[in-house]
Image 1 (spheres, rainbow, N blue to C red):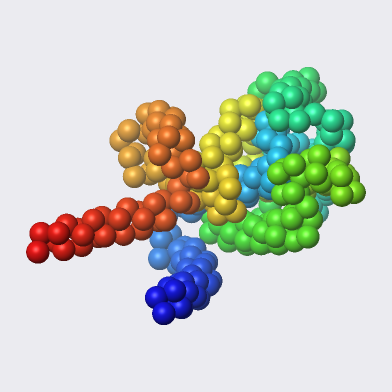
Image 2: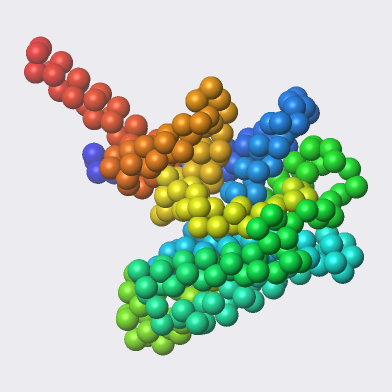
Length: 335
């Protein structure tokens, strides 16, 4: 009887979770959709626009990691998308709204070529190989006068005729939602399941006829498409950029968003990006120490929350349940 009661309670809890997640998601989307109507500050709209941009970049990085690889050139691929779109719009006179998807496709093709070249590399060797590729991309950008070299590229055509921050806010909000939904569907599709199987054991996957190299090339292309897409949008939003915006430090920050949020959860990089982007706004007087706070937070997460900030509610729930159980036992013992 107790077993049936426990099973019934578990089914009720699962039903509540299934209802709670879509409701919470709808509330969050409604909040961000209505935010500019109540907070018209261009500064806060700018900060949130950047948060949407880097959220897509972080989620696309995590998508590649589900295959068991951890690339260290994602910032460089963001730069490839940004510079390709800026060059097409500035020197060929193409519309930015056309340049953005074209540069994303080109970035995906380059990502798949790199994935093909590194298809025999795994774990540390893959990470180091991708790191040197990213460094090489930055030096190539430095070498060409059309990219502005070390000084950076100026006069990039604006995405829209208006400079209103609200217009760009909604553009990046919609682009982020579309990208996140697409990456979610990809991860939880049949292909995503195969990629996770490859990450668990590439030998077992190969033994049942799965073409490991092809799937890793594919996921590399998908991740690079979305980071190239958002990088291109960033270029036309900022209207000026420097190669340093896409160097190894940019990749390192993306890695921190993923790790602090939780690499094993789809929501992890979203939570990590929002937390690290918005944290300095709450400690504005200490903004110069922001990198130190981030580093300290990363250490805390690694030691106390290895599954990231996404696991914090479960940890708190477990803590209070154990505490309540301990108090109940002590009360019974005392009586």
